[in-house]
Length: 320
Length: 320
Image 1 (cartoon, rainbow over the protein chains, first blue to last red):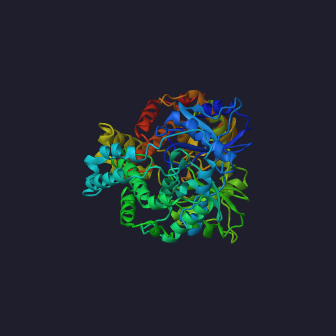
Image 2 (cartoon, each protein chain N blue to C red; image 1 turned 45 degrees about the vertical axis):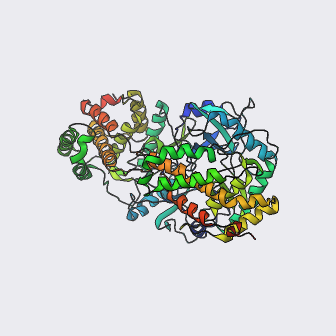
Image 3 (spheres, rainbow over the protein chains, first blue to last red; image 1 turned 120 degrees about the vertical axis):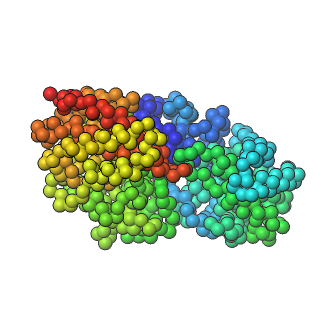
């Protein structure tokens, strides 16, 4: 939760002069999203989210992200869409940062995940994968296998501060994943960060997916593995096989997956757990004192990784 | 900026069951307000602010604060008003904390204060003082003179970490204020914390005052002194006498102040500067590592205090 950049009255006015949105009636920083600064902007013309892209987002990637949101929305996926200014451009600059005005999406993210959330999510994820098929942009997943070793290298010397022997454990796991990482699985555009706070619901109905700023081209099944980790563990890190089954069954009703994808799931789930473990570990060891965002516990993902290491096949995820 | 308490789906649902607001369409943490957790709640019935009162607000003071907002709103002051549930009660509980649903106020707070903001503020402050005259509640200002020595005592040992000799300087100033603090000035309900982020504007028109959680009974002129410090210094701590003159002249057109109030202003301004210096100093020395809120610079108020120490009379504030 954070607003990193404060937008002055003059800067906001100058930014909005390029649009025709009526009079501003409210402008409030939103305590959500750890990567960017987000403001709720209300005008006589409607409600919007104004996003300023902070340093974690590479400016050269923004056309991919914004283009993807437009592409998906045009294919019926409920997601925020960039609002172009009068000159037709949606990607602009504000307070020295890239910035965009985005449509406001109704809904609430689930603070406590229920099985029906997972069912809705599975179907939405499959629809997302299908809708992205003809998106022309390409972006490598820089937080997949090739990105993990450099991350581990930057954490190695101090990983023991978090847990004794952690560097050695992660080295062993990473070597195993490097040896066995699958190739040739079906791939396309994936969200890559579809945690509950990026999925909105009204009642039991999923109303939208947000935050496409990790989206990239990678295995579809890797996206499922991210969701298994993010949605199917209880707060005490017990795995909830019912939630996993709901998610995977709903997914495959929309996009049936291949036997190879199914077989690869446990390994992909280990990889996804390692990915979040490493980025959290790095943030944990390097967050500045007085940081606006409390770092997340890396060991949550250590426990998830341990679960998947014990899995002998996709049956553990509730599939027959 | 912070949301300290995360409200679960079930808790929100149970809380709102006492109201008749229609369906919830959005619920977002707001990155404003350093004392409490604030959420923007949108329903098919309208927009609201849901506030959870965190530890800095004494629960026994809440009836005073909420009652005051109701009182002021009934007398035409634009301020948020508590929304009573079906049982007539506005003060409730949520996630183990006192909580209240508050009406949503349109407007933006000025990030860069202009003289016209100060003029509008002066008039609004005077109207606030008049409108509070028949409010029956009473609450002592626990951050006025009697509260400063205990605060200084808790900072004394480490004040030098912020500036060499600071404890001695503050001791001397506090002793002077204790000797000369005025008595018998006109008093009533004051806001006591009317910083720019608590005052909303649409264009050049003031649309509302918020955050009454420091309100108390004290000298009206002390409230003016708080505003002189909060509104009339430039970011480099240069005093802007034009802003002060706009504020004070607009105030006295609505509520003329006495000669005694005018004469007391420099001393009250020193007191108000010391008050914010001490609370900031305490927070600076005691904020936990990884705190969600970056502590504010106490020395900003040291420079303001130094300015008022040199003032020889109210003429320095632009009054003739």
